[in-house]
Image 1: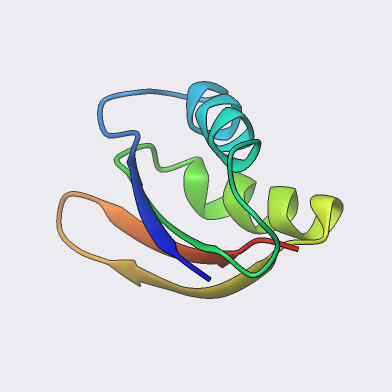
Image 2: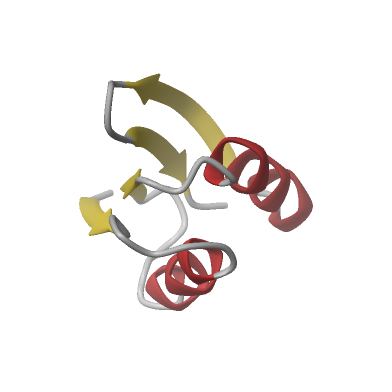
Length: 74
């Protein structure tokens, strides 16, 4: 199991989801991805994407300028 970072800062919907989807193609089951986003829509989109695709959203953290999601690959 490995952990990778995906910084989608500065991109807007649907780009964070598209970049995450592409990134996950190179991941193995059980890997974790730390996604960073500045898009407020990510608060809605990332949990829905994880649920639809069967990935586990382990956590998300908010700061003044961005959101960080920790995702475990199915």
